[in-house]
Every structure is written in structure tokens, then in C-alpha cells.
Length: 124
Image 1 (tube, rainbow, N blue to C red):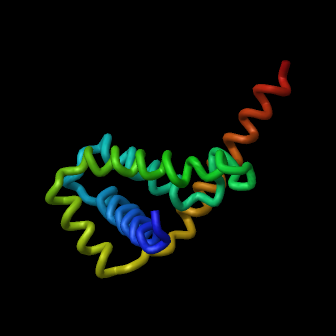
Image 2: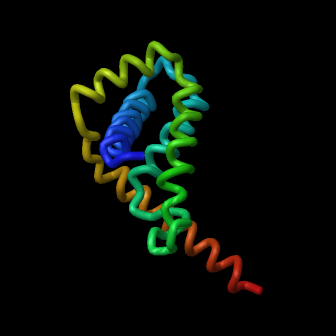
């Protein structure tokens, strides 16, 4: 795959993440699709990955496989007309709005998860 095709693919994924973010706020979207959309967008924007990027090849699997597949699942759950509408809005806007409360929540949830796992492993 050429570099230009990879850049085009990355641009499409970025646009779709923005569109899914917008769809998660749309009252016409079913609750289960909203929930999954919020989780996928939060993971996409999270500075923490399931597999650290410094691990050769495996570290990029979540960015190259897990994220696009979960994004595809959310897109399939959304009504096509709504997704098309939000894609066009995302294309015009160009970037996600900054939300510091959401960023703080993502960091808090990762920290809470790490503390919880540490508590489980250390209590024995």
C-alpha cells in the first residue's frame, strides 16, 4: 500500500471518528449505538492504548485493526442517512471540538482501571 493511500485512509478514519462523535449526540440514534460510539471515540482520542506503541508491530495493532473494526461496527449500527449527514458535517468542520471535561474523564477512567487492577492483584 502506498503512502498516499495510507494518508487517504487515515483521513477517512479521522472524518468517521468525528462523524461518530457527532452521531453520539443525535437524538435519532439508538441508545446502544450511542454508548458504543462514545466508547469508540473515547478510545480513539485516549492517549493510552491497550497495547503500548513501543512494542514492535503488536503495539500498532490496536490503531490499525481494533480501532477501524470497532468504528466499522458503530457505523453499521447507525442509520445510514444519519451517518451520511454527520459525515458531511465532519467534512466541513474538519476537526473535533475540544472537550476538557471529556479528556479529564478519560484520564480518570484509565487511572481508576489501573488502580482497580492493582488492588485485585495486590490483595492476595
